[in-house]
View 1 (cartoon, rainbow, N blue to C red):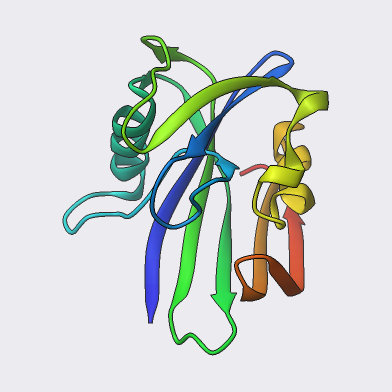
View 2: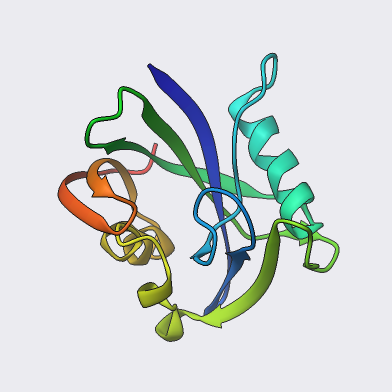
Length: 154
């Protein structure tokens, strides 16, 4: 069973906008913005909606960077996460019920307070690379295995 999700990383110059997840899956971790794709909604529409709901901003420019399949040992469901990088947006990032946005310098990304997989792909995505990846977790804190295939931009 596959669950389709989105993840958008906002990147401007030497900074990246991340959100502290305040509730639900991933609570207490810094992450990009995203979530479930609703029925009848395109992946891009879902990504833009989630960004507006979680950070209060409207995305004007973005590019799809890759897809990550997340599996948790013993779980039948695969989380298929479509990863986007956005740069231009309208509005100012604001705290919402779900996320508290904060800008970080590229060299100060808090990987120790993020999902363990982020350190494997996020720096290269910020450099402009595209990819397809699979990550297998034992639990939310324990990565068992992963593969990343770097691709040329489409």
